[in-house]
Image (cartoon, rainbow over all chains, first blue to last red; front, side, top):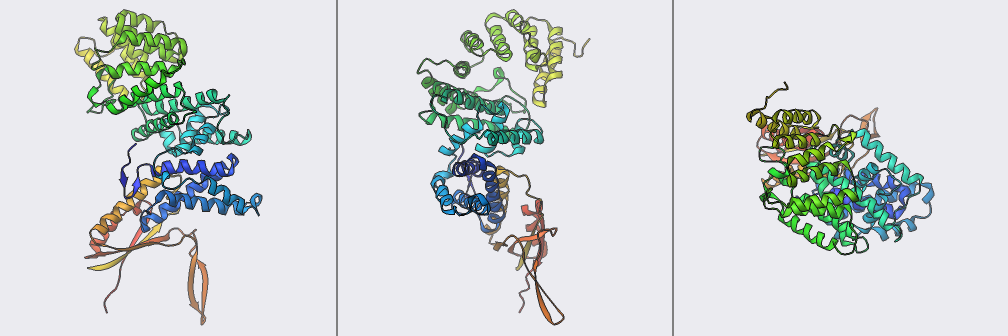
Length: 425
Length: 116
């Protein structure tokens, strides 16, 4: 996390404070007042927006926001009949749960936020609702930002959030840490949401680049925090932290100097973030304690072999193929099959890749551009230029956005210069 | 050099639907603008006016009537003001042109009459 300060404003100060504030207010008043918490936090930020341009940024901006939000909450509750005559009790509760301002300056996650993560990722909520709600309430992302990152309509995201919040109310879900016997299952749901948030930022080459980077950073912030909480730092949590650091280390290398998407084999490995790779290995090592082998362990293992390889050719594909075989047993999915087929091709040659790709018989992947791109690659290695070009065209027709299309177009041009006909015959 | 008053009128709906990062980004823009002015010694002062209804006084029929106003329903309300120094209206206009407030309302410039 950058701590760069512009005019007294630490990067993402508002986002991080919004998350802390909502959490501490919900802790004080219960999750039935989730909406109130969100509204007064919004009001506090609006007050800052109206005042700070004239008065300047206060010396302790986080404390200022907390104070204003707290006062607005008190005002609201004072007017609310249910709390009449209990003002002292309300104030006491607020004091109890107002985090000290100085620690609030950093992007650090509070205990209340940790509880809020578990509320947002409650198994009673839908999977995409959990990710969106975590981003909104814990991460301080706006509906617009979530919509841009998920490449969804604003109204769709808004609806998803409303539905999730309604369910929290209807089921009376509270802001609390799960009891020890439920912790593993509940933690799984949290990890799933963090993984989804990271992947939305990382894998999908679409939408707003800035917001997507922030999504990756947010997922990393959440998982790195879980690792620091003793009761939470299970091997799976550490493995996910390792995986996200390995993947995150390659964020800057995904696009080359010309703005073209660079697949792993073409990336400039000198631009990989060495500090993140080292963190990834440290997490991976601590994830090996115990006998739990989660899908995150296997994925982190695969990512670690890429991180270790000085060049694409030097990659230990045989070991990667073994890990994919294990992953297929632990968490079977057609996308794993696809990646495994690519690894099989690197170990046993293009025939093996093609056979493995053709064996993937899943309608969900029929229009997945990476499947066709992988087929095109295997066919090209076999010298089947026409068939390769035709697979590339099919991939092109299914590629969701510009950067992905440009990679495929470039490959098609290369193929044409090698003698394949540029247009379908 | 003369003093100029920049009256910043807010467009009421300008800040609807914003999130935390938007708020911070907008504040940073204002602060960059006023910091640059202050660095050149051209910022005299700036104040936000309290939100909500003020008082409007009018005389007529030999009496002064005090009424509440202007109301928030009015199209644009003065949200605050800056006083700056500039060599001419043209320079004051150039300075105001860089003010991010133009994205969220309008700016009226008036020279302060300081001749004795």
